[in-house]
Length: 344
Image 1 (cartoon, one colour):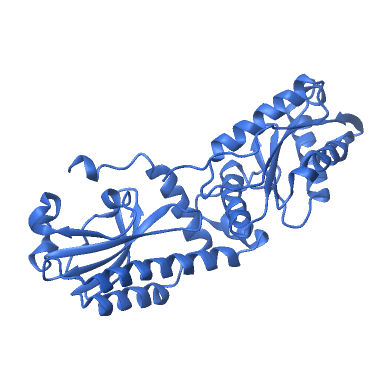
Image 2 (tube, rainbow, N blue to C red):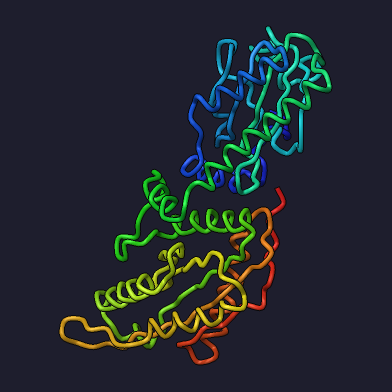
């Protein structure tokens, strides 16, 4: 295997983006087949197929008139390309020995993206003659890949936040937090990507709040009492959030609130309201305990094509630390106005 075929450094992000696509926006086999059949007819190709990036190679989604055996593993090596790729068997040592090349002289592949902007797969055709695509056919193949992207985008946008929540919670690798009943860290992170992408596509701002229970409210409590405080905090937040806002458990004593569409001019006021909502007493087993929390807020006006979730959450953590250093039981707004997206 050549260096070009080694897993790319961006592969973990792409695999995660693909998992969200398959949970929220996957198309039916019939919809995939329409694209591949059209590609085969347009290019007068021997065969056509659609494959998705997979951890150990390519995952064949659908194919028309394919030779026997699996297709060549192209996603790992070709997803760096911006547009159409032509691979000639006689010039490519990785393809020369592939069983398919006994019938095919040329492979043409066009990458396509998911709604978040990550390249997740290839639309491919195989031809018996070298360099047999006309300029019009090359353009048509790229247009079909764009059409596939559009279908994935429409399916993605069709998922409202409650629908996305239900679907992501049913996904095999996404679990609920047993204590609070909220999405766990992986679940709320997936919803963060979904919510951010919707806001970008709808040209709306996006904000989030990182919430930490103040230690004075939990440090002298038993494990059971501290868990009750976290449950109470989750319940109070859920009762005050807007329709479309999302809440998950981020860490042991931290919650993450997603606030899609909330502008910078409103954000600090909403943060103060959440602090006030959380503040008060919690009754457990005949005892009263004081609950308070600190918030770190981040708001974005101009959203990048792809989300750098780590940078966004780091900015929220810095704002949270500022709230703690200022005396706790308050909200602080990060000075970050724009978190750069990932290059892909």
